[in-house]
Amino acid sequence: MAWWYVPYLNADRMRPVEVQSINGITFGPGLHGSEVACDGKLAWQPVPVTDIADGRVSIRTAAFPATGELLEPDPTFDGPLFCDGDPVAAGARLDFEPGASEALLGGWMSIYRVVTEDPVVSLAIPTARWSSGMIGGYPAAVAEPILPDIGLGDSAVLIYAEGVLTKVQANGLPMAMVLQVAEEVVR
Image (tube, rainbow, N blue to C red; front, side, top):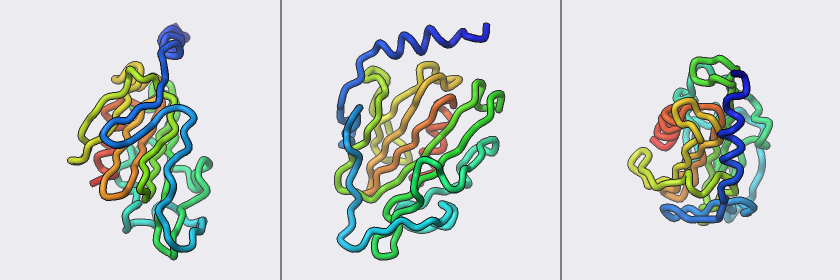
């Protein structure tokens, strides 16, 4: 019974993955991500995401599930990016141990927010799993995992509102949790 999920993953790998646009957000494999909107000086600063409580790219960590471990610093992100002292990009990552109430096989969630005029995201999730949705009153592009109830496979929520692109991406986590976190982040 240990490898029950492998046929699902193999079938999903055979599905086409194409560049597409939903609700004004373009995404797909091999795309160069959004350019940061900044007319001044850009600088990475090694501060915890929790220190950016205010501003357009703040990430409310109160929305994070209690069983997730917030990685500080995020190993996939160089730290918040500032434009003339104002935060214009921020990211956070949570890891979940196997067997956690939300993560049967273990999992992770990453949240990334950037001020941009060009909402573009590089993601390789099969085209058929994407749909249009509403998150926090904003139009969104939503990719469900292969099995939404348990979160088998990648999932993502992309929201572009008020000049800020928000990406919540997860693997191994139920879709309801991913949607809940996305809703709180853009609130």
